[in-house]
Image (cartoon, rainbow, N blue to C red):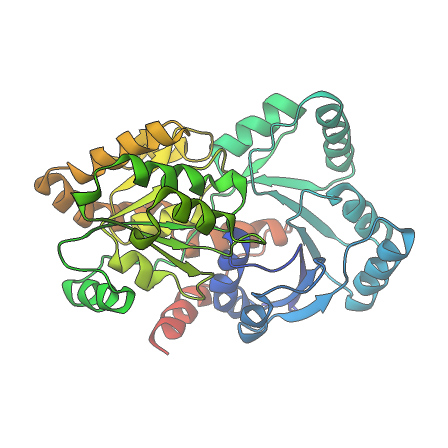
Length: 386
């Protein structure tokens, strides 16, 4: 294999969300292929997930974002000093200017992954479209994480993208055993007869957790329905306030931003994601990978799962529609549940396994056509058993 590839990933504040969890999980595979990993956080702080990046072997840099020229000069200096072979952009904000900075120091490969279906309108749509197409003409490759994102970029901005599906850690998120389920339910204090729904995601309005909380109040109180809610809450904890106001706080466990969400999924009977929009839900595929039935809002980014996973339940984004969807999950026949538990992990690994995504990015990082060494599979197995 040739000299190591030096790759700098550019993100905002490092949080336990989709792109970050993917990059941390896949670090051993990239490293086994000779990739040296750096990450630049442009958040006000480096973020609660920064240590996970460092533990995974990334060299961490932090430059708080500012619209001033001084910020971009500091970024330029960092890129120059790092002598990077690849700059991989993951932010929507200021991605155009990051791309120009990278071009100014002649980074050989510049990639920009679009992590959501950004269907902007009006002047912003026009401006982002011009910026995207200019970067594309300068040789910046744009990557879409799902068909919904691919279609949105083409339709709204006339931008061609390369499709590289998001991945999940398919060695950890596997079919839940009875023993793991019992231990997880004990940990979260839920009974064997409770019907447990779970959601994972930071508490922005986009995630639409309020619809689940309001739906809880619409469903019979004797249904033994429990909601495990994982995510970093907004200032003032408005979702807890809503739960108290609706009288359902005793049936909702706000567990915060978990470092490891696997036990939460193992404790659940079903997964819910009623987002207003999604690019491609990593938490969703992790849930499907453990064999959970799921309720998704019928929006771009979540519709993509329909093609591969039978028996998914879809709903609108209002609390009334979410309540109907939860009732459908609760009434799901046992044979269907058993089929989901057996089939979903197999489908998830085949379609969204980590090694597939890493190899596709390696092909983009090495446009000369240098092939993967195959060391990634061995590294993944070793990391899993460590």
